[in-house]
Amino acid sequence: MKENNDPVEGPDGVVCTARLPLSSATLNWLAGLIRGHLKKIRSRWRALPPGRIAALVLAVLRCDQRPGDLAGGNGIHRTTVTRWVRAVVGLLAARAPRLDRALKEIARKGGGMVLLDGTLIRTRRRSGKENRKNYSGKSKCHGLLVIALTDDRGRLLWVSAARPGRTSEITACRHDQLTAKLRAAGLGAIADLGFVGLDDSGPDTGPAVITGYKAARNRPLTRGKVTSLVCRLASRPAETSSVGRRCRWR
Image 1 (tube, rainbow, N blue to C red):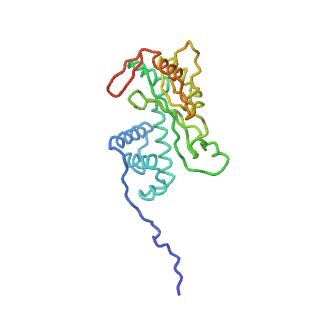
Image 2: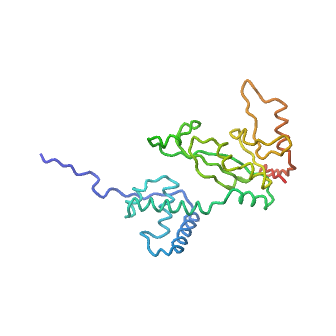
Image 3: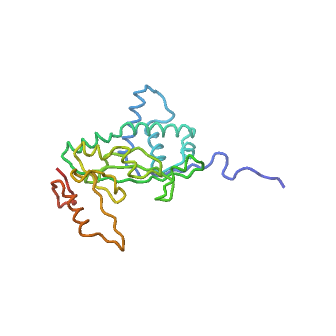
């Protein structure tokens, strides 16, 4: 009997099409950004047009598709897709607003409040001592921590740099000097219980970051703490709208 060691799928593999949950406006915007960058550096040739490059990069960033699979279906090398992803990430990072400029823009438009929160972006687990700092004991997984600011309607204003997952949210905010920049812009922030202890202002200084109080089943909140929280929220004149339960400080 003759032994056959050829692969069942063949040497070329199988190519399948997929659908990305993205709008055409996002794809066109990113393609225009890539096209402008190529014109700026006077690059006359790429293996694929900017539109297809944008689709491949969004597939990697949004759906975590493997560059090798995308490269095989488009007739290019895996390192080419990886290089495009890194280049587009650099272009997007260059357009990100700075913290002080984003806060000044909110103050210029008449806003007085921002929402503060942090999230952990999960990553793949890798071995080695260098990856231990990416393990979050709070979330019990590997990832990168980012801090985000939104306006009172939930629209994203600013995102911090990605830090190792073991970094606490308070440490990340203090590294970015968040409270000092909030006071410089005349704004306040509302955060959850994970940011308790971030604002170290004195009793005579208005709070820059307002958080709640931690309560337990056998240790409920006292009337004094509830009154203190209400006073902190009302430390500045507020204009409350009944639509959307928005609150703007002046």
